[in-house]
Image 1 (cartoon, rainbow, N blue to C red):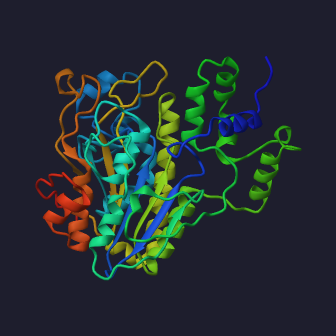
Image 2: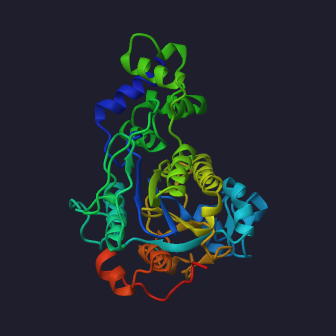
Length: 410
């Protein structure tokens, strides 16, 4: 059987024209300034993050029953949070923030998006902040832009997007500009997953993709001698790599912190790689390492401004409760929100737990959402920027029922 090279896969990726929901060169980073000392950072976790793996409800016997043989709970390296929930081992580097009350989570949340489980529509609704039923439509603005419009004296700082793509979450009447940091030519985990689905029935592709070293090369642009030479794409990748110009979640967060220390007060960027249809144990750990890296860089880079910062990491939807035959999970509904920052009343898991019994699941397969994820973002805005309930429910998040204050801020 002929050997499939990284060049083959890169050329295939280019040929299929990956959309913004999966492209490694479309990682929006957006900023806006406002006359306040408080800061809000929104990290979009693209690919549908499994909240049940991130914050494991090991106290619910339904989790172990649905995931036999899968590492669950403190005895498998996860950190016990409160006797019911445990934190995935890959986030252990953030444990000091949890102990300091500067890391927290909200479980069993989702957007109003239901049943379709499309990454593209789900991400569209997450960034637009609108109600279900509008998936597939072209949204005029995003909820962070609508927030900026409500802040007296707010002005443009900058809006940044890898690949010069506009970030929907900050699109709207409040102006922004684009910025594209230099990037080596490599595939994101989301793009690799897309290729895996497109070429699922190609035995040559599957065999190459199963090789861990090969997969790592795809993600990091580490092209071997067999993949270099006359091909222009490879030459470009080598040039960028040799110049040390790379983009990572840590470098995006580092740049965000720099701007937030200056005039910016609202920032958003994306982290991909959460589409864990197979081999979830390895892929989830890799994605969580990237998230931990980003939060660590924000904490370090913001310095004293960290005490006035709230970080929200959100995803378009969750994943199935049961592990599939490929050691992964499929598209689901309920997930979790990661929260961090010195402004957070952390050290706890927020939300009403719905249970994982057969009669408790959404559609008999997914974690049942018990709260709209937009409500946590809205309550953060209310505390940070003083937005009132009517503005939040009618303008920033049309159709949202805020519900009771979860008291996520100090």
